Amino acid sequence: MNDTVPQLLIVDDELHVRESLSHWFAEDGYDVVTADSGKRALALLGRRSFDIVITDIRMPGMDGLELQRRILEVDPDLAIIVITAYASVSTAIQALKKGAYDYLAKPFDPEDLTRVVEKAWEKQRLRKENVLLKERLKGTGPRLIVGDNPDMAQVMELVESVAPTETTVLIRGESGTGKELVARLIHTRSPRAFGPMVAVNCGALPEGILESELFGHEKGAFTGASAMRKGKLELADGGTLFLDEIGEIPPKVQVELLRALEDKKVTRLGGSQEIQVDFRIVCATNSDLEEAVSEGGFREDLFYRINVFVIQIPPLRDRPGDILLIADHYVRTFSAAMGRQVTGFSSEAEKLMKSYSWPGNVRELANAVERALVVCRGTTIDLEHLPISGHIPGPGEVESEDQTSLDAMEHRHIERILERTGFNVSQAARLLGIDRATLYNKMRKYGIERTE
Image (tube, rainbow, N blue to C red; front, top):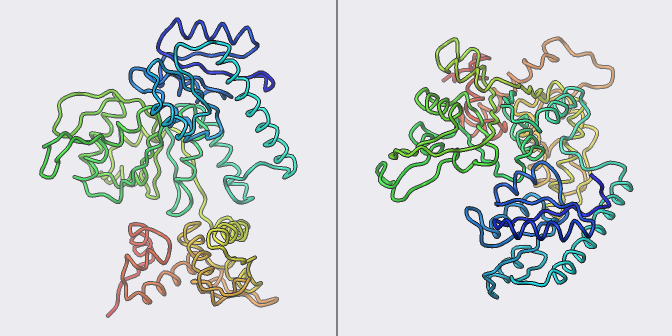
C-alpha cells in the first residue's frame, strides 16, 4: 500500500452509487475500495487501513451513524464523510457532533464531494507527517507491555503471530499477570479490531446468572426477566469474545457453551429461535485445566476446543528485572492522574520491591504503587509508604535457603496478610491484589488454616 496515495472506502447499499463514486475518485488517483454494508465495511477496516470513509446514512442493518461510532471507537482520527438522501439539519448535526469530518446531502455535485474529500485528505496527510515526526523524535513507538524480560518478549511474538488469524487462544497464568491485557492486544491487532471485544469473568457469576449473561434471555424467561436481553455471545458478533477464568464455568453451562462454539449459534433462555453469531474466542485461566479434566470438573471436549493456541504469561517473581520498570511506569501513570510530582523510589524501597515475591503479580504491584502515592507526601516513595513487607538483604549479606525461597516468602506474606485481616479472605485477597479463588488455592498449597 502506498502511503502517498489516499486510501478511500465508500460504503453505500446502492450499487450504482458505489460504482459511480468509485470510478470518479479512481480517475483522480485515489485507491478506492467499496462496501455494500456497515458490517462489510468493518471487516475491510480490520484488514487494512484507510484515510477517508464516505458512508451513506440510511442502510439496512447497521446505519451510517452506527458505523461511524464503531469506527471512531477504534480509530478516532479517521476522516468520515456522511452522505444521505434523507437530509435534515438534525441528522447532519448529530453526525458532526459524533465526530464526522463533514456531510453532503443527495443529490450532490461530485465536484463538491471532491473538494470535501481533498480537504479531508490534506488534514490526514499532515496528521500522518506529525505522527512520524514524533516517533522519530522519541526513537520508538509506544510500549504496550512494560518490561525487558525474554519470556515477555516471547509472549509479544506469539501475540503478533496469532492476532491476524481466527485461531482460538488460551491465555494461561496466575491472577494479576495481565491476561486480559494480552487478550485486548490480540483483539486490537486482529481483523476484528473494529468489532466489539466483549469480556466475561466466568468466575464472578453464579450459574444461573452466568447462563443468562452468556446466552441472553427472552422476556418472561424467569422471574425478574421483564425485558428481552441479548447475551454476551450475541453482543460479540463481528468481534472477540473474551472468557476470563473459563475453568470456573459450571458443567451445565460448559455443555451449552461448547455447542455454541461449535455451531456459532445461540438460543436465548426462554426462546426457541437459533441466532447466528460470528465471533473469535479468547479464553484465560489461572487454574490447572488438565487436572480439572482428569477430576471430571471440566469437559474434555471443551478443553480441546479452547486449548488450540496457548500463551503462557510468566509470574512477576520469575522476571524480577521488570519489577522496577513496571513500578516506574505506574508511578508516572498515577502521578499524572493525581496531579502529583512523585519521581520515583528510595534505594531501600527499590530493594524491598525487588526482594518481594508479588503473589498478586502486576495487579498487586499496581495497587501497591497507587497506595504509596496516596500516603507519600514528598517526591520519593520510601519503605513506610509501601503496603508490603519483607527482608531486605544488607551489603554482602548471604541469605539462607529459606529466606531466598520464593514459595517460602509468599507463604509468610500471605499468612501475615490473613492474620492482619483476621482471616477475612475477601479483604486479604484485595490487599494481595488477587481474587478469592486464587487465595484459597494458595492457602491449600501452603496448608494455611485459621488457628483459634
